[in-house]
Amino acid sequence: GNSVTQMEGPVTLSEEAFLTINCTYTATGYPSLFWYVQYPGEGLQLLLKATKADDKGSNKGFEATYRKETTSFHLEKGSVQVSDSAVYFCALHHSGSARQLTFGSGTQLTVLP
Amino acid sequence: KAGVTQTPRYLIKTRGQQVTLSCSPISGHRSVSWYQQTPGQGLQFLFEYFSETQRNKGNFPGRFSGRQFSNSRSEMNVSTLELGDSALYLCASSAFEGDEQYFGPGTRLTVT
Image (tube, rainbow over all chains, first blue to last red; front, side, top):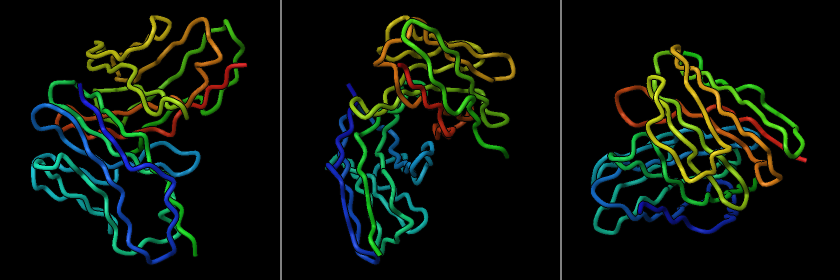
């Protein structure tokens, strides 16, 4: 079946540091890949997505590239801010599974001033 | 456009009771999905409704059920509540085209 493996957290960085959160997936065919972010006490917000191999999703300084050969979709940001502190979820949607998303376990990011 | 709304935001119930949660999708979205989020199990898919029909169901017992109305609003019901049902229940909507899901703020259910 489909699965998503995410880098274990928590991750603590200083402001302006470089961020990488690793995400790998297992799925047949060509799933769509997503990163969602969850701030304390809130629901999930779609951060970025990629729908096919070599696509790069980007938003608010975050980027992730769909790598079919390594089945990965790592999240990166060149310079994090305190306001980026949140939980980040990698997810996949397989075209044959209606609207069901399969999520990774989430990575807690804390950015210190 | 207004986002996905969920009511109530917080709920406290006792074991054995039942509960109904409500979700209003983004205007024009016809698909509504429900997820359960717990610290131990993470985010798990419950079910998806499209045009009043359940299209997909996750691995949850029959105590968990749902429905969708003609205006795309959805409700989920949990009967005979157990302590383990304490969780954040998230609703997400998506348009017919594409597969992006947009989440509401969730309903925090506590079972005592």
